[in-house]
Amino acid sequence: CQLSEALKASATANGTQLMWNETLGFMGTCPSNLGTGLRASVMIKLTKFNEILENPDSPHEDKELL
Image 1 (cartoon, rainbow, N blue to C red):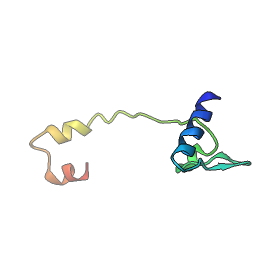
Image 2: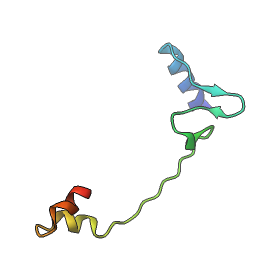
Image 3: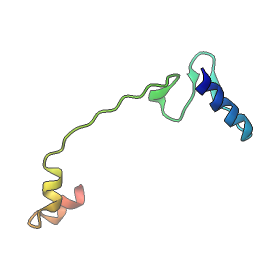
């Protein structure tokens, strides 16, 4: 893959190397990405979040929790 080779060449040029393990693949700082180029994420809608922050009558303690 050209991208993989480009990343390896860039790391080598900087005097570093990518963390690679024959069993696990590329090693990163996030275990959920171990050996893959995939990432999953979830978006949720917090309907009351802005309402509490923007409402001047909301208790100060509620705003501190957010």
